[in-house]
Image (tube, rainbow, N blue to C red):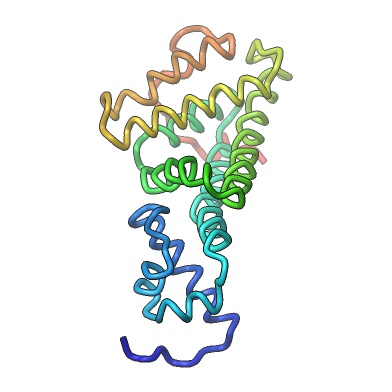
Length: 214
């Protein structure tokens, strides 16, 4: 490999971190090795080691960079829906439609790799907390308004998050019909939220500008 052109340290560090993020989304978190990142960034493994000397730190940071934007994206998507029932349906539908399998792959590998890396496990827990907070906000809104019959929004959010993770992990190996993920969990969620059958499973309706809430 030819010698990489000299760049300012901050730029080179960011460039290597971005290469690691792209590699994780393309090939999974297990692909984020010194040699793999170096190849993706077009630099030597020694240069990766110079800017990111602790591999566990790079893997943990790569995991966060790969998965954290999804929380903000889903939060924005949910925010335009009218009312907690529509918000919950939108949240479940977008997380279970199979379009985010690259991120799901990173999550599944992080659960396994985090058993041997406390730094990664800590970062996984932080991102799980962010997801539970988002789901809990939707559940609590519905409970406060009377739309949901829920005594413990945090517990329901935890159950929903576990179900989402499980169904999406199964989808990675094409176990069960991928298209059944959303209606399957929608019916279970209706029971958790005290909703009549079919209230979450109805087809999605396009949001109109008039329906957008601040």
